[in-house]
Image (cartoon, rainbow, N blue to C red; front, side, top):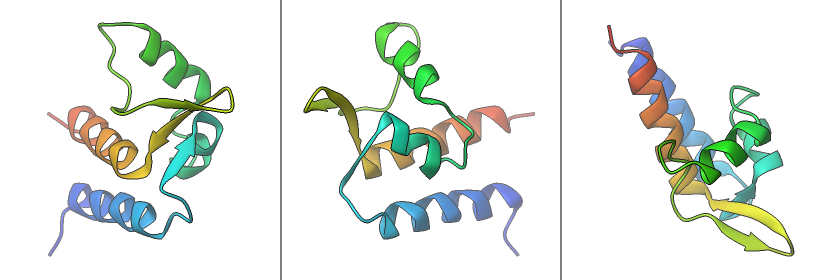
Length: 85
């Protein structure tokens, strides 16, 4: 039987594998994460060396984008950190 943490990780992986593009914008990230992380939070994390946003950020037509798999890894890492007892 899977733990809730494992189930959540599998859901994130499934979402990444079915996302229609290989990247997502900060605004898309809000949708992808079910509203659990905002575009503004990602902006702050990207601009602060101590807070690490998703790896591989790039600009496309003036919008910051993230590779989908990298964003999924980022969410899973945050999930694990916030569930440590």
